[in-house]
Length: 492
Ligand code: ADP
Ligand code: GLC
Image (cartoon, rainbow, N blue to C red; front, top):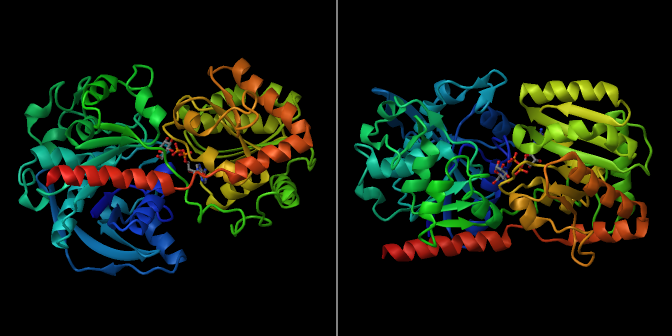
């Protein structure tokens, strides 16, 4: 089974959020299951830096590709690197990809994101052809790669290309709130026929939506948890695309929810080099040492019995930062400490900056993207907060479990598929869940968690159970393989 992954992010080379974790882990697992997987990502300057720090070399394959966009030819070089036995192709065009950030700066998205990711999508097809890699499955991730299914159906010189006649397309939605919306003129720039600009096509409330095209023109759409697959068919969670998703779901196999896993090698408190001290399941002292050192590093009062909440998050509306800030007086009154690491929108940075001054000693906020520091928060915190408004899957809660930090989450999306409330199920519970997006409901979950925390023996038991959970990729990668096989079979 030949599988081609195309993604705008991949751990450990280019990461903004969980998409990178998924693309960093799933191809390896599929390879272990016998697939021949190749991954294509852009050669951002972050990728260049990370390759260097990992002491990995990228080789220029001397196969220049050309993609025409906006009536101009754009050239790209194909670099090859091997990461843990997996072959990656890095698409090089410094004009598009040698930027300070991946998608946006604090001022907003890069203005030419349509062209940048069109270049990735069409470039990926050119790479497959230049290397004569005929994929059985083309697995696309998020709107940045949606031009692939759209083009294979509609773009001049690409549609009906016999090279891809044996390829089926799987399109994974990691987050339906990012849709790749552009003005109507995008169609012409990307070489698409203007008649696609209808409600049956890729028109979306006056704009052109790449994500919508990805959904309609792929063979199968997957999303990253079974619960989110249901939620996005409702107006509450569908971001305007619920109708389209209900429509494609009439074919029972076309929309599938598969829960993400976590790379259990990359995230392992027994071997993680970033921790103050490595620890395994049941090693209460090892975990405590990490907590005390974290309190010191962050300038928090070093009171080991105080429950320490952790949060590692993109700072966006999705993640419920505002709910945390609103609830801070009560969180502090209840005796919690809180350590936040986040990067993202200016508005949340400002909110947290003010709060940080007020709750000095009990609240620490660090801005920026710091992988090693994130790991120390997972290890040093007693509980991990994910009060998300919506959460397609969420990896934070699964990583937290692995590090023995008990998740306190809002019951939405993949959080509901992975966290079972301990207050209501003492035998199987692995965290605390609240349902309404409200202070009262959030505080209720925190109070329930606190009551258990105060009973040290009970808390240790809960921590041990959390660390024994299996959210590795094993089961989920098998489900992807089944899906690929079914699609491939339907082709023969
Ligand atoms: P999302 O993809 O919506 O951001 P997930 O929970 O699926 O949420 O994945 C987030 C991933 O990004 C986790 O691996 C988390 O540890 C990491 N992460 C988020 N923010 C930061 C940050 N500021 N610094 C380091 N890692 C971060
Ligand atoms: C998105 C979602 C997150 C999910 C991740 C990986 O960024 O917000 O919930 O875990 O993608 O699929």
